[in-house]
Image (cartoon, rainbow, N blue to C red; front, side, top):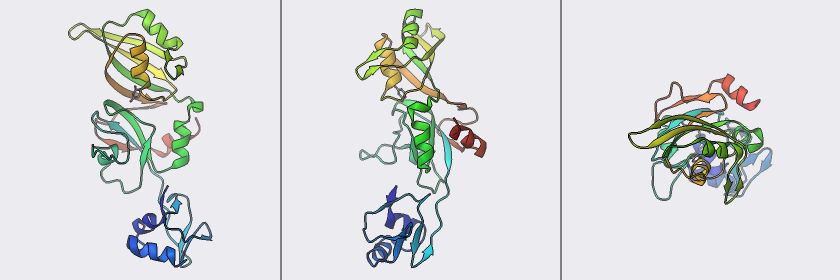
Length: 237
Ligand code: URA
C-alpha cells in the first residue's frame, strides 16, 4: 500500500505536488469513489485509480527470488542507512517488498514481490511451506541435540513445532558442525535460538530452500524473476 499521490506521480500523471492538488480538487477516484484525503493509501497493483474520469494503468505484479548476502537488512528502508535488500534489486521499477525476512547476518533465499495476496499466502504459517536452513554451529553436534531440534525446543515464545534436522558434516579445523534444519514457522531469529537452546551457537546461517525453490542458478547478491509456473505452484500450495 502506498500514498495515492505517490502512486499517481510514479505512474506519470504529474508531479507529486500537482497530484496532491488534483486530489484536493476532487478530480481523483479510487474504485469509483472520489477521494480528497491526501494520505489515502492504495494498492497500485489492484486499485482502480481515475483522474478526470481517465483510468491510470495498474502496476503489473512481479515476483523475484534474491540470493541475499549477509550485511544487508530485509526491509525497504532503514533509518540507520544500512544497505537494504531493495538496494540489491537494481533495475526493478515496481514497488516490491520482501516476503518474510532474513536477519542482517543471514544469507540465502528471499522472495520479493508487489503482490500483497501472494506475500500473505507465502508467509502464512498455516500453509507450512518448508524453509530449509544450512546452519553452521559451534562444536560437534550430537544425535541427542538433533533429536531435540526435531521434537521441538522450548523458546521464550513457546515450543517450536516438529522440524527436520540433518547432520551434514563436522569440520575439525574450526570445530564447527553443519546441519540442515527444515522448519515451517517463521519466528524472529528462530533457527539461531533453536540451536542456542540445544547448546550450539550459530556461526553462519543460510536459507537454501523455500518450498521447491532453491538457490540454484543465482550467485549471492543477484536475483532472478520467478517463472509463471513457479508462481502458480506456490499459490496452489
Ligand atoms: N532463523 C534465524 O535465526 N534467522 C533467520 O534469518 C532466519 C531464520
